[in-house]
Length: 507
Image (tube, rainbow, N blue to C red; front, side, top):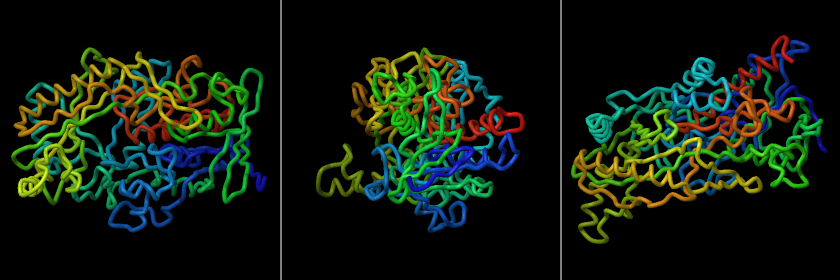
């Protein structure tokens, strides 16, 4: 063992939730026994690319090196695990395509409280406002809407649907039209939680990057366990960070895999490696299922030199699930940004050769669009799970998903016809068996009953003293998933942990 250091808290994962939790705990917390500043280690497997001045946009060359800003074609040269689910980098990469963000809906608070948590709008207000302010989340101004998005909004409203905008973390956006499908913003968008890092560093957090945590040290204690720290590798050496408190913030697949490697999880999957049992680690995987309906218009629906960030507005259809648990979203996925010509040349609408193909290409980038149908299964339906050895998603089929997605397709086609579409694609899957689980969450979810959850409402493990889980795996489900939800978990989890563990009089 090359090095052993002692801390009050070790946070594993400097991504969307981990950095925020580190910053706020370091800023607001103290050692409850001595009143001293906390000794916090923030360990990240990926590099710390963003070492320049922390500012948003303005063509900053350092900003453009951030992993969330790379083109899809460049992913082959970026450290990642497990493909294609995430990139390892200080700051994380959750807000990438389009920089779309959401704050929780009423349905989300209701679903979270249904498992016995006190995660109400009022209780989470301060954490939500924290993220909104730091990321500068806002809806786009009216002048930013493309003709296609305006047509979508007006047509949907005339059909009786409520249409609402998404939020985006932008301050100086030039609305270039290239912020989607691999062209994440290299100019202005706050694409991850690295903006909290100065707060963490100013308050004494030790950032240990390019260091992979191999396991959380858990010792058996009665029917449960107790945390003693983590083992990690850096520069080929094995080190140990000792602490009575460890927070795991590795995401909805990384967190359960690390916990399983540490001996915490389902008995039937861990076998002889089991130290503490919880059958829900890696299970209850939730996420959305999505598919697009492509369309061509006879007139431009986009502006060739200017656009927005995609999915600027959407309608919500709840069907028979009035509480939002069967939420179906229909959004303006490709009614704003300009499509790549080399992709459009392979479009189902494109003529094969000759002058007809050339004429088509002259108009397709501004006259082609698509509407995305997305669905989150109700909490009563079968959930997926994470393979605790590989991190792969196992997401079972569900006839109800197929039914709701087909309903979404029919609503979309009706809407597009009323919008005056020239051609509408027929390419829409008949079944989505095994295809769901995007924007995942819930694999170490919070709840009052250990029989169906891993942590309690204060982000504390039910069985392992000193173990916290604060990331996308923490929340049970979401009507609409995005990186901002993980960020909110970081801000909210930090406040709960400070109140219960790192303040005067805390245990």
